[in-house]
Image (cartoon, rainbow, N blue to C red; front, top):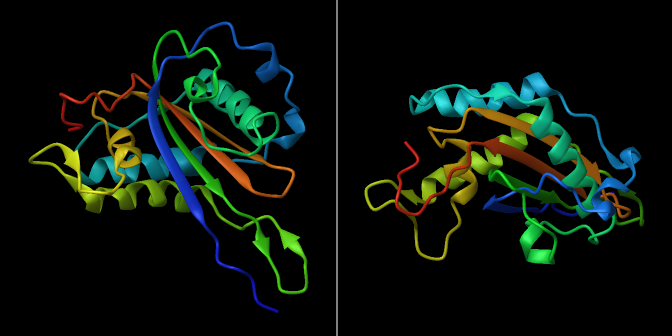
Length: 192
């Protein structure tokens, strides 16, 4: 039996987060949250950041909570999509947070079985870090027709804290969310 290929879809955005979370977000089931090793995902972030000489991030329980709320909402009420709050008509965060998103498809076997993909925190961070090959530091932009905003948020020198969460969708896909404060990806600033 063979499994179909795992597909990762990433999105990164700076968003502004509203302190009054929409009721729909608060009502999502906490049962959709998957376990996440905080130390492992923080260590993975900091290993990438150390390679280019930017300060380490610290873990934020507040950002973890916001990431969990958003991952739960995206995985259930929003139909298992990776979108920023403003893209689906919800209020944005008040204070401004950076955000990295990743959606992973379930593993589907030829015999019809479906399983949640086996991926760890390090692999998720490395997926974002790989976008660095498409970042043109001199001109401060992504290569033509490429995405690198997940990478630039990951290594944004002014970001100090991160909080992440992961939730499963009804079809066993996964939504990974990391929030960063202060946010990055300002067009006129280089990330480091």
